[in-house]
Image (cartoon, rainbow, N blue to C red; front, top):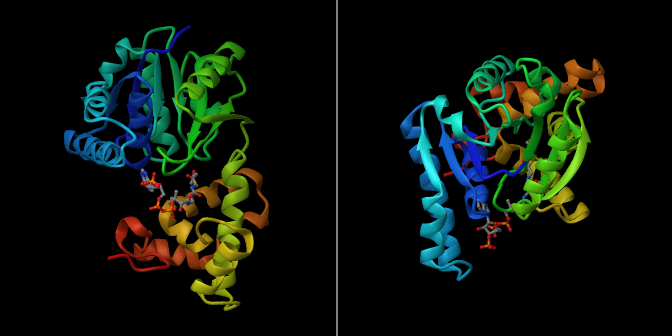
Length: 283
Ligand code: CAA
């Protein structure tokens, strides 16, 4: 099976990035969200990213226009009726995701693969909402999608080998590096990353060091591009909390207990860069 037409569901930070890299690789991409203003916002971000590439001489204006022509806006899930692959990047909520997958199962052609960009929710459970669990798989892109090379490819319990192979090959055409992972809470990326971020928040909570000091230690000491508290703001503190809760619940182990300070910030609406305030203040 060859993937030619892709639908991306969710035009937020992750969805617009996924749509961009797919369109740049020559796929015909339908970018779908609930409201046209969300889709327009996502397309605006893509346009800006492509313009930066033109300014930096990495792409001509004609190539940029070609990429934009590969993108079609949509607010109707019925548009999945002609695609080969759907990549869902909607909100991290199991109820919403299973509802979307059940609908897609009815709409998408029988051969179509249904992928989720979930950062930690079980692919096996999402797949169980469809009558084609063998064609359901995880494609976990990293933020910012146009820059980060990794895609975790998650096999659900029923994912077929052929489906895994199609998605691995397709990921390579996006100039990304696919890495195979099995379906356990947090997969690999967030199972390792989030406890580190949570522990950094505990060190702040317990007064071990200031936020700047904690970030400086990890940046200069471990050669991380961003300190863990800056990275948490960048990811979104609500997302960090949600993933910690998924790990805590999924493994039932107290080592994944979210730091009370993280809960407090989320309750205050201090969600990081996107709300202008998290551990740091953003203008
Ligand atoms: N979209 C597109 N391009 C972007 C971008 C964005 N949102 N942010 C930065 N870039 C590009 C810049 O244009 C720049 O490109 P050029 O050099 O070609 O012009 C390049 O990235 C570097 O950017 P900057 O010089 O502005 O800043 P930087 O050197 O600090 O790099 C960064 C920015 C790539 C984000 C870097 O800080 C970094 O790697 N941070 C860590 C990112 C990370 O850990 N991501 C994983 C998050 S966890 C996750 O995604 C999983 C999950 O489920 C939660």
